[in-house]
Image (cartoon, rainbow, N blue to C red; front, top):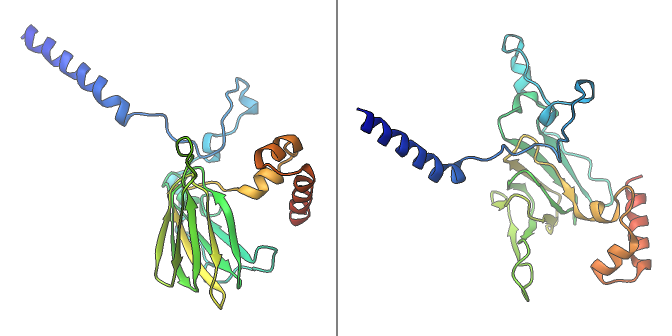
Length: 230
C-alpha cells in the first residue's frame, strides 16, 4: 500500500513537471500594464472591470444597437472604426471577444496598426479592399515579409495578434467590413500616431536615425500628426 502510494505521488509529480510549462501561464492582461501598489485608496481593478451581481443582470447588459448605421468617414484617412467591446457592451466582460464595424470612403485607409492583445478576423460586406500584414522581425539579412490580398464582398482575412496590418479601399464605391477580435479589449496601436505623435514626442535624433531621414522630415511628420489629432 505504501509502495503504491509512493508510486502515485511520484507519477503525479512527474506529470506536473512535464505538463505545466505547456499549459500553465500568467493570464494575459487586458491593459498595457498593472503596477503593484500597497495603498488600497490608489488602486484600480485589474482589466478595469468588476462583475455585476447576477441578480441585477438584464438582457440590456448583452445588447448594443446601431451597427447598421454607417460611420462618418469625413476625415483625413477616409475611414472610421466603430468598436463594440467591453467598454460599451458590458456583457462581453471575461468572454474574450469583441467586434468592430469599419467604414471606408473611396480610397479610404485604415492605417497600419496593431492589436497587442487580439487576433482579428475581417469579413467584407461591401466594396473592395486591399489588405495585408507584416511578419515580425526575421533573421539576419532578411526583410519583414508582407502578405497581402484583395478582398471582395464575402471574403474573409485573418490578421494574427500583434502584427502590423492595414486595409485600403481600392474599389469604386464606399466599403464596409466587420472585424471580430479575440479579446474583450484588444487594444489598438496606430503606428504613425504612436511613433510621431506621442506625448511627449520621441526625440528627433532617435526617429531620424531609426528611419534614416533628415530631422526636418521628422519635425514635419510630428507637426502633421499633431494637427490631425487636434
